[in-house]
Length: 406
Ligand SMILES: Cc1ncc(COP(=O)(O)O)c(C=O)c1O
Image (tube, rainbow, N blue to C red; front, side, top):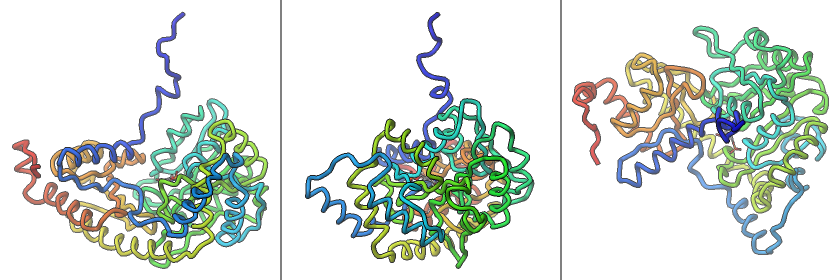
């Protein structure tokens, strides 16, 4: 009997990344001469550290650009071992490390190593857009856990209620994309302890852990358990994309139990082989070189966070919990439209401002506004939003006109 579709059910259930689609839409509109303001981005505008650039160029000049071991070069693993010692206070071995093409790939490979078809992957709302889709690609069922009415932190009780016999992994992200929320120690300890008791692996997406503001400190997972890295049932994911502004290098890593890392490395060996040789050399240089650029980026982002939050709060009707980290403000716009996709489309169409609808992160009524691009754009973008939503915009909207002509 002929199949009804040549595509797998996983392929049919997956949409393109909305944030990447918005990037493409903004680029297209700009190329057509539209005065687009892009507040939907997810990468710092600063340059990668000079040492990282030089290390890549130096390697290229030798011509010795060949396959590396599937789980990463020994040098890159050693850099991650040192990083883990410095930021997590744990001594690990190379066998506890897998290097990947970004945290995206490390997470995907981890899920492929952990789930069977029909298993469940649990994460709190609002979540990073790719978690549900990654779970689906791996054949699992994504289980988002909604926040309690009026709450900003998820609760251990709500997470526990979502766990079943089919739960294989819980994904936590602190500080969070999109909300900038830092998960507190009580919550982390509660979830980790609960998952350890049930044999569920906790995937800690720490990609923003050094980009935190106001002197706040992120609790890391190993402060919440006495168990060793091999016993704790935790996989920590991190990378160079955000903290070193090295998004295009595509280097991330996973640190966890050697048995899981081995299984993941086997999968990666067939999926893509080792990550880019040149990028690994650059990442080693970034991790082991002068760390001033991370501190400079953090300082810069903190100033931007303060100004962006003030600007958004100057729009009557907008509610915001100031983010404690990352480079996003996740603001409640439900006073204007409970349908975040419609509101985001309206902003794009009428005032050419790109925002990401909250529903993509599992929360209706919200918009994610990035402050990693230029502050000139943030100021102009929020000015247009305020104009459209509060000031004179509504009359023009009724007329159906474009507000900002080419
Ligand atoms: C929470 C979170 N995890 C992972 C990633 C992916 O990072 P990478 O560039 O290392 O694949 C992102 C990128 O936006 C992110 O926001």
